Image (cartoon, rainbow, N blue to C red):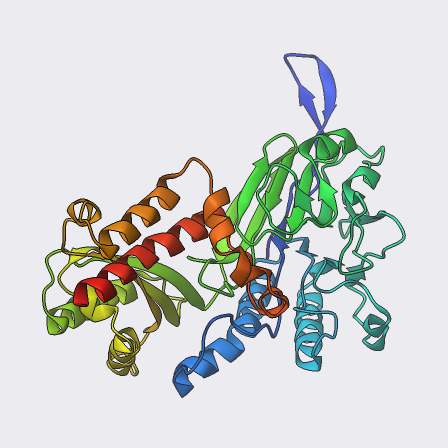
Length: 440
């Protein structure tokens, strides 16, 4: 049982006066559970992989619950996006309810704020949480006093939930510590201006956190675990389970230990499935059977390197380097057939390593600079492509695809490309031109 003790006073001989000591306690900071979320970009998986994916977010919650029940911290904070969308599935809501009940029986309190994916709505009232759970409302920041069994004040937890999916209020500016001389905790789902994010919700700054006087900020929304500030200590715990290929590596929560007013954090892995982008240089590989052997060996290494908790890894292979196989790989259907064959060899492994897709970042085994100097259509096409790729800005490159991305149908179905994606598209196009025109 984790101790939550209160050291009241201690005599300091050097200063000759009584000093008030702040409480010692611990809590778990988790966020972005996205319960019952569908994994993005994964289709046509084997039944075994499909089952693991369907249960992944729920299993991560189960591991969080087990951690709380075994370590018995003073409380657990869930910093928003517990559910994956406003119309929360019953399965997700029952899962959270059951987890909270189990933590309650272990003497662990739970504090919840809602975020942009699960703004606090009327449907939340259709479930009755046990007494150990406190859900922060949307009208203003609320403060909850947490006490020891003896009635001594341990900490004050502050929080406010999003009331709509596109919350634009600067909620962090509403937080202010109470006059209590204890370590205080804020829970908020927000976007910090110093952290790169494509979606800005409840925008905040480190200056907002500092002005509040609150000691620890338990944040949600950014799925990468990171420390935003040391004074005050501001952290994103990251999501408990990665949901797509850009959320690589182990995912979990932060276990926060507070002693005499100072906090330290420890990562705990909760996710059962990991995502990984794996590059393979095919410079010296000249046959497909050799490539298959290299991939299989790499997958064996990946399986051996993951943690014991991991049930499987979903991999994107990125084939790099100049290779005589480049032209063969770019033929219609070649990558699909190779992907399917590699998948067949990984069906029954544990932990499984599932090949999501293959990205071709390789180049043909030719002197492309010499090709550009040729006085023919291929040389001209490669020269134009090079000019677009090496330009100081992407204005001309973006203009060249404006007709495609500017149509009403395209706007509904295509994502606007970033500058880096545009350059990558142009690089791939020049090699496609080389394959097609050189073949002629």
